[in-house]
Amino acid sequence: MNKHQIGCIAISAIVWATQVAAQTIEEETQSAARTVLNNGYNQKQQEWVSDQVYRQAEQQKKLETLRLEWPTASSRLAVSSGPEVFVQTISIRGATVLGRRDQRRLVREFEGTSMDLKAMAAVVHRINTWYMSRGYITSLAYIALGQSMASGLLVIDVEEGRIQSVVSDTGETPVALKLAFPFVGKVLNLRDLEQGLDQLNRLGQNQMVLDLEPASVGYGTVVRIVNQQPEARSPLNQAMITYLHQANESISAFPSQVTVLSDNFLFINDQWAMTYSQSAMTQENQASSLFSSVTVPGGYWRMGHTYSLFVYQQLIAQGPHMRVNVYGHTEQNKVSVMRTLFRNQMSKLHGEGALSASNQTQFVNKTRLTTGSHKKTVGQMGLTYQWYGRVSGSVSVAQHRGLPWLDATPDLDNLTISEPVFMFDKTTVMNQLSTHMVLPGFTVPVAYRMTSMHQWTPHTLWAADRIALGGRYSVRGFDGSLSGDYGYYAQHEWRVPLHRSLTVPGASLAMFLGLDHGTVFSQVGATMSGASGEGSLVGATLGIDYQW
Image 1 (tube, helix red, strand yellow):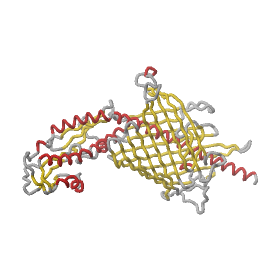
Image 2 (cartoon, one colour):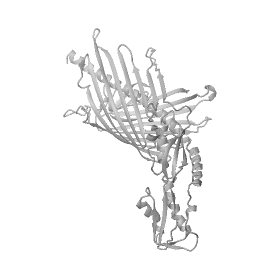
Image 3 (cartoon, one colour):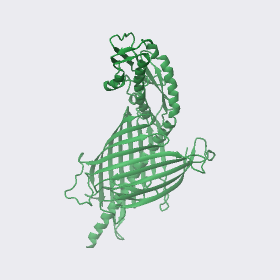
Image 4 (cartoon, helix red, strand yellow):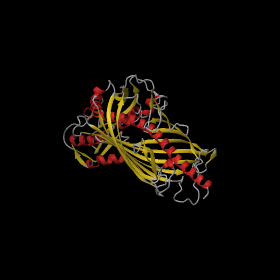
């Protein structure tokens, strides 16, 4: 093997290591932006859950008041107490959301029997219970007026309370409310109203609650949405600057990360985020990335788009008088659609689909590398289940597949197991768990949070599709990273709030301890560089979190 071949192999190895490191920085940028958004949403969700009991009690009082104003079952009974009446058939009239099968199931055992007023009230109660248990809190069943039942037919009328209008505290209906509550004219369901509130309360400027008022005409309801957040009329804009200094780096006047958030910029409940990060900004190593996202909700749906751009350059010394310039960029666009499939008071189930297209280009001394330059299209389908209570958490399962769409680079024929593929399949599972624990020696509850990520695939993957350990967002405490085709990592964090006397009014101070661990595997084992393949990492972090 001559010196030229050795030099080419060395350059290829360095380019590969550069690609892995570049991908790690890009993933950290995207993870940072997602973490900022998720932390804000999760914090608001916890506040929403902790306030649930109070809101339900208040809402129950309002419902009791409404039922005093609306017609009641007792005022509509046309049958007086007396001898039993033989009932051959029971007919439910006016029900649209109560299907025929459920109707028969509710009344079947009472048909063909002799019924007194108490038995008839039991049938009505069973129907009302069906409506109430499914969130139709303003619908009412009662015995129809003016019937003789001489023919053996018992008619039960149902008045399904519908949403007449959705208005703000000023009596107006802006576009934001129309998008969050596209339920006007439909039968009022508490789950629909909770879904609309969820969509509104995603935004940091909102703390929405609802009031139910009887409509001025007919058996309907006016839903009034009140924002308890003061001065929330204009869009909320935020900016965060992060400085990260490591012991082996010189202090820079430029921040390592800048994040800009905007809520309701278009007044349609839209949420925007943009993060710019830079790392290793020296003469020999330069890397920067840009990540942006926007989401717009509508009823049970949520649409989103993300864009990311990563640019890097590295000068590699080849002898005392020669340097090799390795540089490139990766650009990605991703569109996603999410649908809430099921929800009740304490849990939700979401379905999500996404399609991403990326374009990666690499150069060495102005020569485009064929192996490092490609286009890739990936489809994703998944389910997410969330629950709330003393122990809150979520489980997300997703299937990813490489697709030959949008001019994606095809796989070569007769690939070996060591060569990465574009048309891959992988399964990911993400778990989150949070609770508060009372520990001996602590006067305040200790908050505990666990996050884990699992990935499995039968294929050898490109750097962007692997699971990586290290950095700031998987196994913390490592400057570099270790990536593999499949594996897992888990983060455990304990957080203890410190005494308020140590902070200024409106601020919070907490001490946190983190313990992370993970293991990755590869289809071909570990590489000589150690940057990818197989191995395990364990890291710990200790710090003080001060917010104001």
